[in-house]
Length: 132
Length: 119
Image (cartoon, rainbow over all chains, first blue to last red):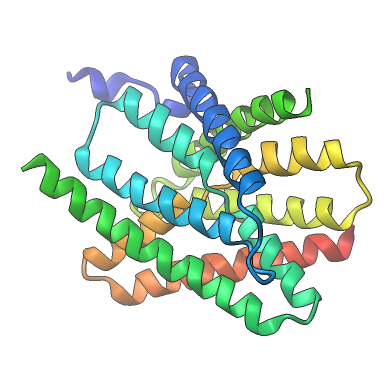
């Protein structure tokens, strides 16, 4: 019997939850730092776009490098999970729509989605290349 | 003090994300393939709803920073959602990838609008 099979899932193991919490705190502080320093550009929250796209690239890279479970929980689920945010992205878009800035809302929506997608693919590719 | 509490709240939010995502995965394991991040979609939709409500409500700045930027920012995540879409596309499931990316964005935006409306 392999130990993996008898091990409970990560969300039920206190050490795993602790690693994610520690990483999440670091990622959140880093996101706060970036969004505090970088101002909006013509009403567009470019700092949030940059954070989310950069985080998507780094998570792709990390995933392709396939580190051990502890590093994956600390850096992937924790740091990069806490660094990037979906709630701010959704609410920023909603606020732009509420202010009748539809073009800006659409630009923000698509810039983040397309940028994040491309960044994830690039990160995965870069990580695979690095491993070889 | 606000920044310290926000940082701790971010850690709490990330841990909460792991627990909610993991619980949903376990509960749905028999019906939904593990590659599809249903738990994560639920995390992002509920977090967007809560932030929509918090932003529309008249909460003090400190509370917005600690709960909004910290707790809900740490709870929701974009990187994993984006990676899930990319993996679907790289697995040759382009339609599913587009549906996952646009569906998540549409659901979270709708949740944010609903949150602002109820607040």
